[in-house]
Image 1 (cartoon, rainbow, N blue to C red):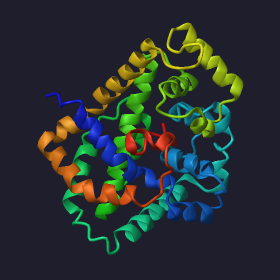
Image 2 (image 1 turned 90 degrees about the horizontal axis):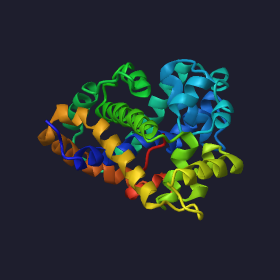
Image 3 (image 1 turned 45 degrees about the vertical axis):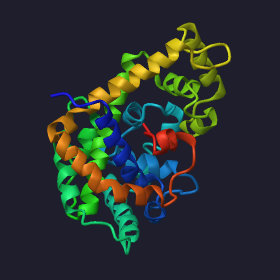
Image 4 (image 1 turned 180 degrees about the vertical axis):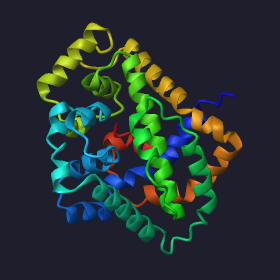
Length: 292
């Protein structure tokens, strides 16, 4: 059975912000600060939160899975993150931060019971085949939280990393290296170049990537995507959706629609909480875009 491409994309739209609170919630920053991380920017805790499921990951592994970040940006934080706190401490703290955020959000919000949604989300996540998908596999190996809101967050994390690992496959199939993946996206106008500053690429590295894309006919002299560039990016997204479809095929269209309906009020409450910056890499299609 093959689902309509729109369903895996809609599922991602609903789940991505539920996961991404980890990188923006004040409660998560408070936990990071208590561990000893510098929280003046989100990057020290980001790399700790994101790679802790691997254990004490080195710079090479972190750079490989955090594909669109420059090696220099990753090396600034990994493996130094593990001299601040051990990975098991980071994992416990990230769950506490998410728990505190959601408890505050749900208190008095009048949202429906999340038990059924947690069961459906877990069923989808547990059906995700993680072979060749390191971030999905590392998160899937963690213990499932018992509380429904945390089970939903954990399922959202596994599923978004499953999709993200597939997205890297799609980028590589298109012949886009890490910097080119950002330059080609910015060239479409979907995201401003300045919004990728946190990825750590120098002006020279960005310009060199643009030159490589121009030589392939993906961008014009002004750095804008050509028809070939737009078609290439569309193919990346099509393949990403295709590679992300299996968990939703396993869950089935009816149960997937049921899950999205149950998550609707929570999704809207999270988006309206004001955590995410307007525009930038969290502004694509009005919901958080991937931080791959």
